[in-house]
Image (tube, rainbow, N blue to C red; front, top):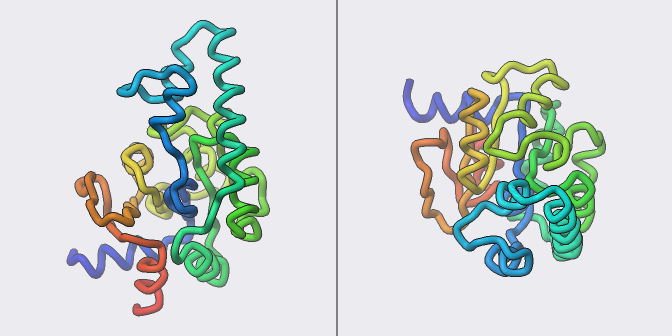
Length: 207
């Protein structure tokens, strides 16, 4: 199969799972500052570290993290081409969902501030960190697949980070790496690599 055929098989799938921060919205999280505020070691994953702590301490730090992310949601701006691609997918009758390491409520707020809320009116299609094991675990993606009655070969996972791509691979579906910097650090995990969602929208128009 040549690259064009592979690309077309990915971009015209009917079910799309998007990461939120850095994919549908412009990245605003300063993870180094967040780690410092929560006392998380620089090399550690924030969620995994908090979950490894004693129950009461973990719960209090999760509350603090929720508050930090709620404040950040007010700064949300749609990523380049996000509304364009989501409009195309809606017109084509595609199903879209979000799988995020944020909470469900913060995801909803982020979408509204970014002007993308109209595309995600079904609450069950937004899976946050308290709804399923966080990425790269595919549990949340499996939940969406079950809700949609979709098999992995009908699904695309699009994201900007390693965990998004690993989640897609763990599910066995197609993956799109969105990297505005164009570095594409995890090429082996992505079926398509783009610097913006506008590129994906243009690919769909050109076929």
